[in-house]
Image (cartoon, rainbow, N blue to C red; front, side, top):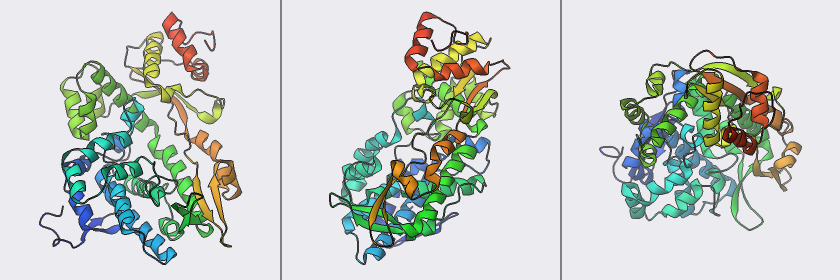
Amino acid sequence: MSKGGAPHGAPEVVRDPLWNNIRLEPDALAVLDTPAVQRLRYVRQLGHAFLVYPGATHTRFEHALGAYHLARRAIAQLEETAGRPIDPASARLLKLAALLHDIGHYPFSHALEEAGLPNHERLAARHLTSGELAGVLDRLTVSADAVLALIQGRGDAPFGGLISGSIDVDKLDYLSRDSWMCGVPYGLIDVDRLLTSLVPVSDAAGRSVVAIHDKGLAALESLLFAKYQMYRTVYWHHAVRSATAMFKRLVRDAIATGRVRVEDVALATDDGLIHELQRDDPTGLAQALRERRLAKRALDLPATDLPADVASWPAADPDLCARVEDQLAAEVGLDRGELFLDFPMKPGMLALDIALVRRDGDVARIAGPDAARHLGLSRVDAELYRSARRLRVFVLRPATIPAERVVDLVMSPPEAVAARLDRGTALLSSRGRG
């Protein structure tokens, strides 16, 4: 991006539909011109959501620029509030970590992490410690390990909560950007109010951390509610989840049969991966996704209609879930790969852990059950989370799915479900929980 652009050492300005002008400092320009970062231009932010919301073709690259921009704004606000500059090395590290926080991301959003592949924060290490990006960081005398620690939310770097925390710049950008690009009014956040409410404080160990002034509590609630609404209406939309379930099965089968390798999937772009999958696709799922022939809902139940103690294995154990899908398909007259069980989960979707500076100067903590003392939304966060979730069974051909049997199944512990599969016991029988 810097090639042929601004003179050496001068910031360059790029135009962004969400934040208007984004000023890129020389460090950022050097990093952006590496193949690892340029790859993000070809990785969509929202995976298959464009099949439902045609405008949702924005990329991880745009999001990275937005996170970097918000990091610069947040640092400036903390410096203004403190009345002194943040340590330049720490500020530099924060801005580069914001720019690179998604460097290890897979194609098609989080689907492949759901499918059982390592999370993208782990994969970031590969890009930061080898190749051209690692060379650029070395020339900038920036520690790749320190950047990685910020991305992974560990360590004690000053103000690390800006990169991985309750109100990190990742959330501020993706919720705002996803809402804007999808054309929905659900992800609206009072970003300006949130940023101007940021306050630097020291924690019990004497480390510099990000806090929020209580004048920003309403804006903080806007963030939480935006997150809830975006999951309910966009990220977990039934057609998006159908496409995601099909894609997970497609890639898992391709990896299991050796048609693609995990290490290659991690470096692919959206179009590159789907093209590779289409070249040899005995399942037919790649072409079906390309032509938007999605599996239909045979069962769709809100989590609020289910017992609160539903097991987590449908989302947390992709191997067991795939076995269950194949058995259910056989029991309702479908072929393997024609039925998909979907019950996504996001534990802590509305959880908070951040320092609060009261108007009298006292510092409290918004976390866990205590959060309800400060935020009305936290009193109902568990019910909001449940109302965002839905238990669905998708099928590629018409089939009758007995709702009570499926509910009983997903309430069963994974050991009991696996035991029934091992014994060859029908999952939709009336025997109950294994």
